[in-house]
Length: 269
Image 1 (cartoon, one colour):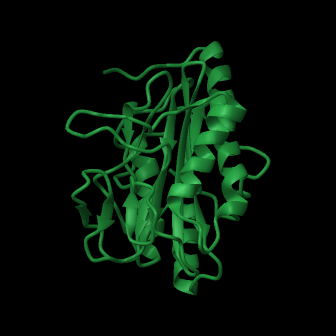
Image 2 (cartoon, one colour; image 1 turned 135 degrees about the vertical axis):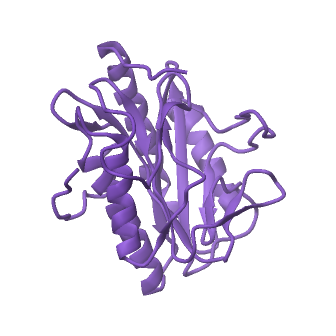
Image 3 (tube, one colour; image 1 turned 180 degrees about the horizontal axis):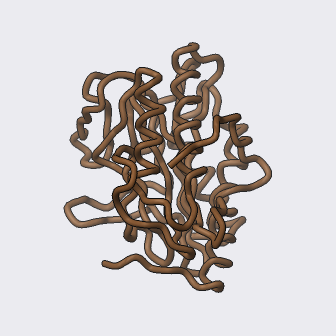
């Protein structure tokens, strides 16, 4: 499968889908508190997507080769869950951290984004992991422009995470996105500067680093979807969908409630 360069019409549709995905996260934010179940968060998001936005929740019944259909409309990854957590009836408790991963389909185009949430007061080490992961994502985004290579982005993310004492998950990565949920290229969050695909205007892909407080190794649970840290350490993830423009980048998954871009040193390829 080759990389799809988006047309002006594609890009406009992707802006809409990206904003709508981000607005689901804005909507659900006040509900993420101790005592709520991830099932309830899933129900609220599903109803908002379908009944308010007129979007389709992309994860529901999504079934790539080798998987069973994903049974819910969002992914809810709590504490040591790295990604693809399936919403369930277990209440969130004070001190938990949870990633909510939202992908909507609007007019045939996908918008994909995720945010970390603190449930009540959380421990300083959990806050730090979430913050460093957020910085990792933005360090990668800041390098997006024509001529950058994907290895430059991965290397910047890996360097920041490892300098903070963390590790980068290698089995899952960002991806091209458009009319299909997952397209080329694969955007890994580690690597060597000057290697990999060269970015061109019109590419759209996600940057979504998964950063572990402990070692990088993973374990997939018997449900076939939920991925956890092998050493049960905390994991964090943030995700944006990004367009390569003629001169740099445009983040497509932004809305009124999007967290501000962090204060970062200038990233260098």
